[in-house]
Length: 574
Ligand SMILES: Cc1cc2nc3c(=O)[nH]c(=O)nc-3n(C[C@H](O)[C@H](O)[C@H](O)COP(=O)(O)OP(=O)(O)OC[C@H]3O[C@@H](n4cnc5c(N)ncnc54)[C@H](O)[C@@H]3O)c2cc1C
Image (cartoon, rainbow, N blue to C red):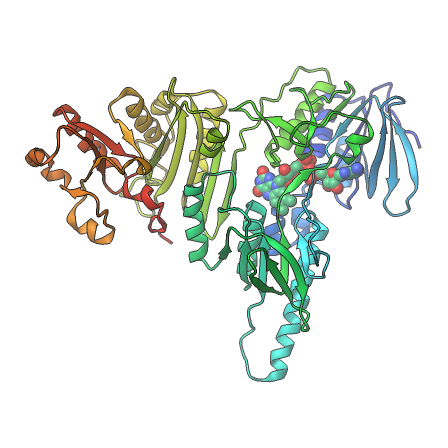
């Protein structure tokens, strides 16, 4: 069956009907009433919220229907888009400009011509060939049917277990079931949290030495402490070696270190890789990260074929490196840009900063731009970092919570490179503001001057974003020479906290002179050595640094004070 053109308009086929594909289709219709648009989707649904799947598993989003953003009917009636679900694109023939489509239900293959083709096939879950990986009870979280299968498995398991102890007559409380989540990225963590909400005893196995790989290890430690406090068992530095099923039907997750984690359900969240199978049938260029290579207009090396979303590789906005970033925001924007370009507009994708956020048990981690480990990996040494722990809003207004922030910026010109933040309140708006600043090429001097919302319940007259700018600018202007804990081995360490604080957490190498006594006790300090000053968070150390510098000492503030020494869990209040 040939794709019908409403007028003599362009024929556009879009492969993949979720984030990138659906936003491309809807945008294209808004720009071009005459185009004949066909959107094909292999799965049973279009335009659904895969980001909501972990919360559906946990019952926070109770109804599956709530995940459906727009259905086939909406696309047909409101946008006049021909939508075919259960329809897989299996081959592109660039010479004849046709796509072969196969019905998932019947296997029937049809061929459709296109003038422009957009690929938004997403990514597929990484599923290593481990022994036992296909055993029942091992799931991934990618689609609505995946989430449905997990919910059914859990409900069946609970009924079985509940029935067992009703029968035994000994226990009155339904026992916890055990879950193992493999992978400490955001899908793994969100699913782990939701399984804990459902009463599971959850172990998260992660091969790396930290969870949340995009952020730096010391910031991830803060999240790890919080998650453990809320009942998640973390098994880091240990890869899964295989799976077995015991006599009772329960699973065993075997790790490379020889551990065995029993489980009634296993969630695989090891990561994703771009789905490039279809692109390869057209001989499209695949880049060095394994994603479809596109230009800033989302055009592949074939001028009539565009690609967007998780399937492509993108330029990192800060480093300019090719990278893979599987996030909904970029996929939606790229879909829109592809539609613009097809409709004759000159839209360009600026690159991806990897801005992301995850919540767990009321805690939040968010980040944007480049991390320190990325800067180290690419050998970039023109950067400085600061740690700060401002309150989420005015400290005198009830409910203020600290936010742990790490901000990276260029030493040479002050350009903001990236930021990571964790806390329990209003972390998102700080990282969103900093994300905007990164994209606009702002400097830390711009952050000093940012005019942001303030009333006591919402912020402070000096917002954490301003604070970050002021601290970083103090460093670059030379008002606050900085040191970091890993460079404190040789200096003279001065602790300006009050004695009562030392009882809570001591730094045995430091000489203690509380800030209020410092001016009177300068004679106790060496003039021939660098004095490295600590307090709890860095603020009093900065005041002390200013005193000592003006009195002719060589002084430096230890960034982030005691809080950044261990990146301690004492930071969390809940
Ligand atoms: C559980 C989960 C939680 C997430 N949470 C977040 C979050 O909180 N924040 C965030 O920014 N991102 C999140 N993401 C990532 C985000 O959903 C993706 O980055 C985004 O959906 C990518 O859009 P896409 O169009 O490239 O691919 P998708 O949205 O995955 O859509 C691709 C579609 O193409 C279809 N398809 C593939 N090949 C073919 C073919 N040959 N023929 C026909 N159809 C085909 C697939 O069936 C699929 O439905 C989450 C993802 C998951 C799975």
